Image 1 (cartoon, rainbow, N blue to C red):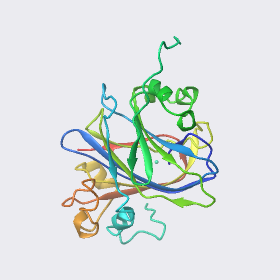
Image 2 (tube, rainbow, N blue to C red):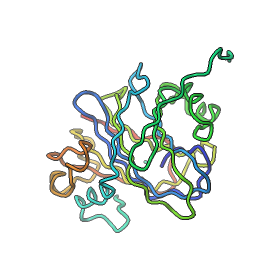
Image 3 (cartoon, rainbow, N blue to C red):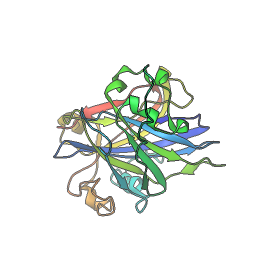
Length: 251
């Protein structure tokens, strides 16, 4: 699912699309249903290329294509109704605040390193002691989306961005859960993962769409996130599983 800066009452039906582009950037599209009693942030740790600074990722506004995952699912007509298939030195000056961008209905920021969370509103951070339990994140950046509290479950439009990945040979899916301020060894997963890749390993182990993406998805409305003339591959993570991120081969 994802990492939240405050406790959430419910998170489910997480869907993620990812691919690596020709210039070594990874595209990521993320959607879930959630319910929260207070404003909070959804934080996606991402393996950015060393040296990626402020403005290093490009957010994509998909407010105009809220049904992107519904369309992707059309490429897999044999799916069941749920879409599941067969895992300190005191500063002498105040740091410059991180840029906040309007991306559809969200406010979004890129946090280049873990240390840069100090430049973000405290409501939208996860404490460093919690991040320290996942040592790999010490070299990651973080995409932060600010969400509003609601009295009922919210089906938000997809969040999307591209980033210079530290490893263009692999595709990264942010699947670690932090929902209550703790990193549990195992968590309950309810994920559908989609990708476009040339990896023979993925082609052998993931389900393949019935045709090219343009045959079942509005690739123009995807604003470059989905390649029209490639197949899409899908797998699911469902049930109580190890609380880790997911990597697959890109080639």
